[in-house]
Image 1 (cartoon, rainbow, N blue to C red):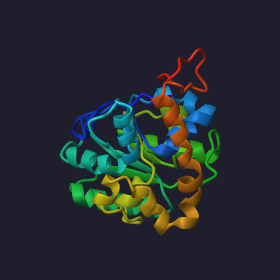
Image 2 (spheres, rainbow, N blue to C red; image 1 turned 60 degrees about the vertical axis):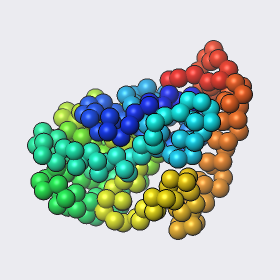
Image 3 (cartoon, rainbow, N blue to C red; image 1 turned 90 degrees about the vertical axis):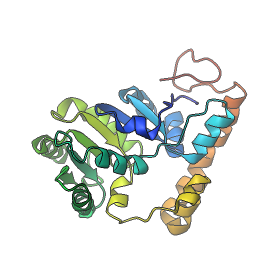
Image 4 (cartoon, one colour; image 1 turned 30 degrees about the vertical axis):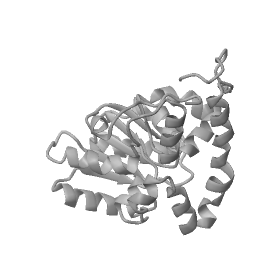
Length: 253
């Protein structure tokens, strides 16, 4: 769809993956991938791409490229740590969210699992940048934890770029999970919508209604831009803006 290949995986299949980098694709990311060349260029660092949007799930079906289910990061992560609760070889580092939120999420997850599956947390500043002292200290902290899975929640685009530029520096991590607001959900710092709201594709409206000042630009200005792209794709007139010689209808990355 557009310039992104979406893997047709079920949740059960995804939780069995223990190595690689997983991206959970939603509308905001699709829009960024049409305009942000740096984001587009690192996309092939991700081994698995799931459909993390009910809107995109419906769009794929309309384009006759349907996947078997929506697989969101916030639904996947509890399944992941529950699946490996009894496997001491699997440990997790939580990177992101506001100060104190990751610590709360870690304590709650460890209590549910019955062991210290989360072995480290960090809440980087918004000014975090590659090559800075803060960045080097974060890498050292993750490596010292010995975590085999790294959840990065720095916001769509930013978290994927950070993973792509740091994979070679992380010595014990095998599984990379850029999962946005998942840490906030695990700490109960942000309330998730009822399941029926998500299932009918109105999770965006739920979030906009609860946080209009924070969310209005994303949901009212930015994300609707995906609609004309999808219309062009449906009629075979979409062209990948970055791939040289791309065929009408888009290409994979």
